Length: 117
Image (cartoon, rainbow, N blue to C red):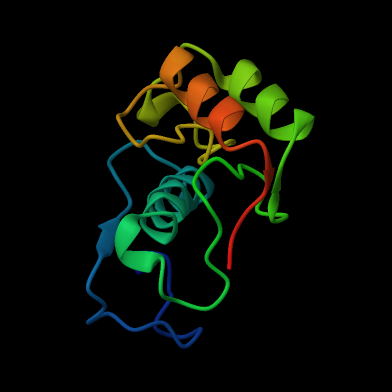
């Protein structure tokens, strides 16, 4: 992932990355980075990532390899928000349908306990 317009080339970033983001008009660099991180977090929790080292189950919002009350709290904190509204908590949308809702809570409850490889 790469963020255009943020001098990432000078910091070793790859402008030929598969996912290139640009700072939107009126958007601060910090907000653009939050948007990029939210997108990266969703990609990292996708089914295609299951074989990669460090993968955790989508219900493990805090990526600590256990689904517990902290994960439920995160989903409840983000409840009702859409993808564009939740850059501070990018992984609460556990089923990746674009909104944090009861389905995400069900994913957490159904995955209770240890998870990940």
